[in-house]
Length: 616
Image (cartoon, helix red, strand yellow):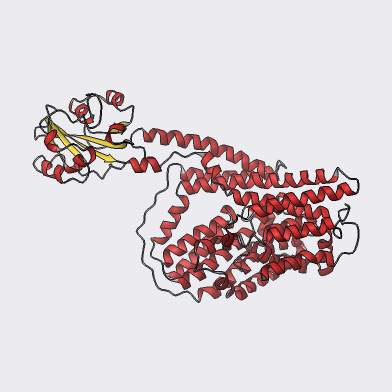
């Protein structure tokens, strides 16, 4: 309720300071009319539901999209009431164009992030950190440094979630460490994102508007660093030096992960080049990069398709180096006993294709008892409706590789370092109502003279892995983009654009930038963004478009990007970690550290004003 009260107070402020009938932009001013009052009430009511998303289970995009539609209806009716049917149409087209550029840029970036996640890039980084055996204090600093470094590229939300996962994996039941480390991660991610167009939505909007060039963002690198470093020094004192239990979890990156990371960097460079050298929207460069990812995804899909032809698990070879039969196959005397005790289904045929062994795991897989098949040539029956050679028969008869391929549709290959042994894969509908996917291995057994005396065939049921695994598909990565967030931006941009047409932003601009002064106003923007979220606040500033120096635009970029760290609900990174670390990292826990975060916030502003005084 306190939050709603603050929102309402901020909403009615422009009407209190109302001074003229003409907005700064030159359009008609409807602030003091029923259209204006109703428009601001609709916005406040819709936006007050956004912080309550987790409690109400109402996605944040829904109320703001509805509000955007209602506000623009009011805008159209307001202009129509004075005989103007053209202005509202042109104005909403302008807002839609701004949203389209932001949407396409973010869609490409989100697709890349989702693709890298699917390739296990972030999971690999997480397991590397967790398995090192670092102390809690060292993990605190490592996660903070990485958050500050990664967020300028991968955005602050993704970075906070990644580092938050590391913190929770290491922290375990240590709630104190998790709380402090989560706050540190959020502050670092927001600060790191402030000096890069790719680090936060607000910096992206400023860059796309042409207010700050790409290289000029680095003027606020040191202020951003201090914004994180100062509170981190205070918080680190609350972190103990004990060493948590080391995790032995191992995750490997999938095919093409390294090349995809390089391609993402190339795409970022393309966006910069499109903007700086071709004077085209950065979104066009990002979409060009998305096209490159599409072509590369086709390449990965073809590779994984070929890999599946023999094992179907994205290039992994489950038996390679693991199947004990590969090493025990020469131990002819101990082999029969081993086959019987082997945990995977296995059977053996002699040099006349007669079944000599059929282990219990084979009985369980096929439903055929050993007594019913040993001494016969019926080892094909559990798998096929008609009699045919199985892989063991083909290996025994020394069929060449191309002929074996005809029996298994090319899903086969030679076993490395094992002479005359083959692996194959296939689907066997007869084994159950739904059928089973099996990996098959056949290895010849030889006597001391080298004569083949039989063949051992082992099988592995990988039906579950098969149903869970899938080839890389860029369309699936696009589908996994954060559509609720993208649609939320639509609602915010159109809401603010509509309120601008009603005259609110013109008066708000006068009150802030003329009444308070640019430095005070831009510093206040960060504090307001901690309550209202920095995206609508920054878009409002850009829509007001006050005449400011480069130093002031850098200041508002710094404050809007880092001000959200003051409160847990002030940034997407904070809200996300409150969800993942529910019950441990809370609003109240963050509030305890707000004073030291505020010190870092104030120092960063002073540092910018001193270091970059020539830009003001």
